[in-house]
Figure 1 (spheres, rainbow over the protein chains, first blue to last red):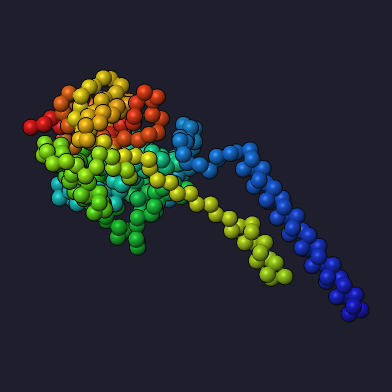
Figure 2 (cartoon, rainbow over the protein chains, first blue to last red; figure 1 turned 90 degrees about the horizontal axis):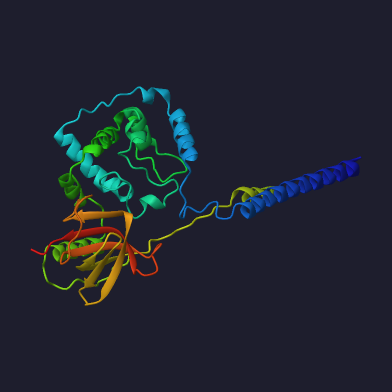
Length: 215
Length: 104
C-alpha cells in the first residue's frame, strides 16, 4: 500500500511538472509570437501615440483619479511670493522634462512614450486643480511622470503650489523664464558651458571652449 | 520541487528589459553669414562654415527670450543646439534651438 502511494505521488508530481512545463512553453511561445508580430513595439524611439490612445489614456487616468480629488480646491492662495517659490521649485524639479515654459520641448521630453505634454494646452489646463495635484503627488504609471508626493496628501503644500504655477504657465513672461534658468539643475561642466555661451553671445571675443559640444 | 517552482516563477515573471539612450545633440557657436527660410549658414570661431537646417519646430531665442517673429540677421552671433537626426542631405545639422544676439 505504501509503495502504491509513493508511486501515485511520483506520478502526480510528474504530471504537475509536465503541466508547468507546458504552461511555460505556452507563455514563452506567446511572448515570442508577440515579439515577432510587433517588432519594435516596446521601443519609444520616434513613436508618437495616436490620438485615440491619448484620449483613451487621459480618460482612464481621469476615471482612476479618486473622486474626492476632483472636487478639491487649492488650499494655497496665489501671491507673487508663492508663485516665485513654485517657479523656482518647477525649474529645479520639473523643467528637465517639462521645460521652464511648460512646453515639454526639452532634450528628453519628446522622447518619452507618451511624450511629455505641453502643460499650457487645454487638455491640461482644463483638468481640475485636485486632478493636477493628484498627478503631481501620485505620478502616472507607465509614463515618465514620477510620484513627487511624500507623506499625506493634505500636507503636500508644495504640490499645490506647483498647481498654481501650472495655471500661470499660459501667461508666463520671458523675464520669468530667464530667471528660472538659474534654478535649472546643471552639472559643473554644463554651467561652465552655459557661461561660455552667454559670454559669446554678449560679444566677448574670447574663443569658446570648442565649437561642438556633444551632450 | 520548491526549487523547480522558483525556477518556473523566475523564468516566467522575472524578465525585465531596460533600455537606455542618450542624445545625439551638440552645440554650434558662430556668426551668421547667410539666412534663408529653411537654413542658416554659420561661420564658427575656427573659421569653418556649417549649414544648419531649420524645422518648423526650431525654437528661436533672442538673448534667452523665446521669439516667434524675430530671426537672426547676418552678422549676429548664435549658439545653436543641433542634432544629426533627420538631417537633410545638403545640410550639416538640424537646429532644434537657436539662441542669437546682435554683436554690441
